[in-house]
Length: 257
Image (tube, rainbow, N blue to C red; front, side, top):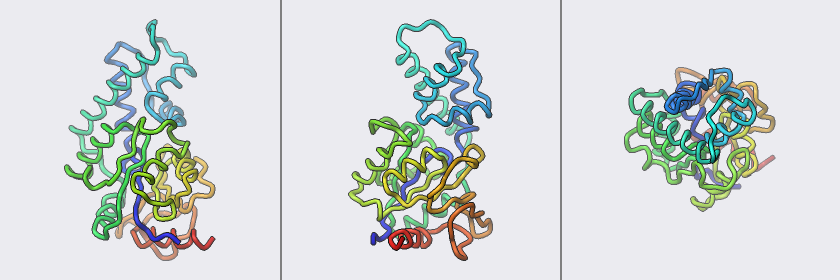
């Protein structure tokens, strides 16, 4: 049985509700920069989130919705430029508007640090986006809190492939049975499951109806002492909020199953 050594966090939708009010807005600002009439509404963006990765999401939109666009000689370069503009808008937005972390996130990360539990990030978003969120919403030095930042194009395949979690585990020299992963989406859950990780899912408005069959725990959020979580699937006993002790308990249960 592995002892709890690390917590591995997804970013978008898991640490903060960045999708609707940050990424979506940044995409639309990037489109406006180059004179595109595209507008990703809240509902449309929910549909586009089935594809992980910003560049991949733009390509999916072009191929599936066939929006009006200029004639381009190199579609890949066009998408890369759009995505770079979007990333800059996202970073600017977070620098000027503090995006609150989801309930329990700051508390759990601080508790892990206090107990010498290692921390890592495993996400499909770009490293610049991770830096923007952590430094502006968590703490100016928060990047130093995480031993590994596994992000963006560091691996050949993005979620739902397990590559990004395998990368994080390799860099930390840890086994899956020594870690607990935190996700918010079906693609994220498939990715962490593929890496053999004990996984806690905290749903949001975009992911609440997705399939998390087999996840170790599905919660409304991580909860706070004065704001208990709602358990959607799994067993937590008398725990009203997620803490390091519960993470260790989940690993223990999994080893016995």
